[in-house]
Structures are given as structure tokens and as C-alpha cells.
Length: 286
Ligand SMILES: Nc1ncnc2c1ncn2[C@@H]1O[C@H](COP(=O)(O)OP(=O)(O)OP(=O)(O)O)[C@@H](O)[C@H]1O
Image 1 (cartoon, helix red, strand yellow):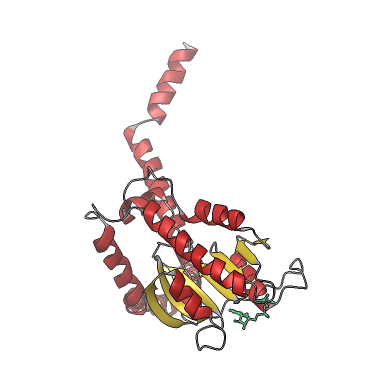
Image 2 (spheres, rainbow, N blue to C red; image 1 turned 90 degrees about the vertical axis):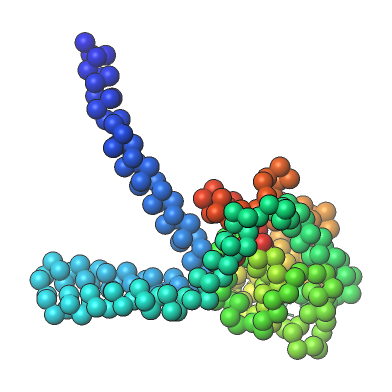
């Protein structure tokens, strides 16, 4: 009897509409989560905070029946959709181009594994060269979090990553050598970018602002940053607030490979699938 009632309750609860609601909530939640991850560290965060404030005031106005305030806020909210499209036109265009380039028609394109491997090889070539000659370098690789805010501070390069270009960029007393190179979408997006400085007391006093900037960006984004010290030639990596000082070649290669090279058996790159599955393109991401 009890078992029968339990079964009845179970079938009542697990109707198609309940399941559909659960799937609905999960899908919306997941897309919101991916959107927040994409926007973290970009100017869009402030914009969305502003929109949130307006929506909260609109709700209060609605509750308190403030008609004039509600009317004005309604106008602002409906026009803000147009404003967002205009403000983020470059990002939207890039995103759509990206889907078109590698989306459903990406057969024959280089696999993420190969792209990641090539990126690590080029980085390794530059790191070895600069480390031996004590050429100071700061290279930040975008992961999941957008780095627009920092990219805007640099000098646009938009070139394929190559060891030679990285080395050239950091040659002392040249216009681009100061600041950070930022790699996004497997391309050198900019050089001479300004990164936020960390205020952490845990950073050894012997390390200067280059290392502090590397830690700073790792505190606010999930980027991987490589530093070559001008004083010692030592190689340091920062990621997710971790500072890994004076790494051997084996160590930095192991870390970069783990972060930037997906397993070989992964399918060819497909941004739609990546977005849905949350696959991290590591340095080859928009
Ligand atoms: N906020 C920043 N964003 C990007 N690059 C920065 C920033 N601050 C400093 N740098 C870079 O760091 C260089 C100064 O490095 P400094 O000697 O202070 O650092 P360091 O950590 O001691 O490194 P090194 O061991 O190479 O001397 C600057 O010339 C500039 O290229």
C-alpha cells in the first residue's frame, strides 16, 4: 500500500512538465553562468551592474506605484537594448564571425590540441631565448575570462603567435617592450598593455612591478601569465592568484601544456559545442 502510494507520488512528481521545468531552469542557469564567466573582467560587468540597479529601482517604483518614475525607467530599459547592441557591436560582430569561421563548418580545421601545442612551442621558444639573455617579458594568455579591459590599454598587434615576434616585442628600448603582451584567440592581441598591480603582501619583496602585475591579473581573471625576469632570467607563472616562481623548463612546459593543450582525442574545434560543454579553448578563445 505504502509502496503504491510512493509510486503514485513519484509518477505525479516526475511528469514531463516537471522534467521540462528542471531542464529549463538548468539550461537558463548554465547560459547565465557562461555569460558571467565571459563578462568577468570586462567593462560589461559595470554596465550590467548599472542595468541591475535600474531594474531594482523599477521594481521598487512598481511596488510603490510611482507612475512617472516607472514610465521613465521603462523608456530607459527599452532603449538600453539598442544601446547595448551599439556599444558592444565589435564584440557581437567578433562573436558571430567566430561562430561562422569555426562553427558548423569547421571540418579540416586545425584541432584544439594542435593549436594549443603550437602555442606552447612558440611560447617555449621565446621564453628560452629571453630567459638566457635576461630579456624581461610579461605575457598574459586569456582563458575563460574576457580581457578586453586590459587589451584596450595596449597597442594593437593582431598577429599569429610566434616565438620570434614575442622575442622582438620584448627587446629592451623598443617602443613595444614595456608592459604586457596579451594573447587571445591564439593571436597576439596587443603589446605594451597595462595590467592591474596586486597589493598582496605575500609577494616576495625581491620581485618588482612586472611580477606584481602578473599576480594582479591572476587575482581578477583566470588568465595564465608568464614572466621572464630581467634581473635573473627566471621564469615565473601566475594563474588564479598562484605565483609559481623560478620554474624549470620542464615545470613551465608541464604547466602550460596542462593549461593550454586539450587532450588529443578531443574533437575538432566547434565553438557552439565548446560553449555548451564549457570546453576551454585556452589561448585560442574569443
Ligand atoms: N602594471 C603593469 N602592467 C604591465 N607591465 C608592467 C606593469 N608594471 C610594470 N610593468 C613592466 O615591468 C617593468 C618593470 O619591471 P620591474 O623591474 O619593476 O619588475 P620585476 O618584477 O623586478 O621584474 P624583473 O625581475 O624583470 O626586473 C616595466 O618596465 C614594465 O615593462
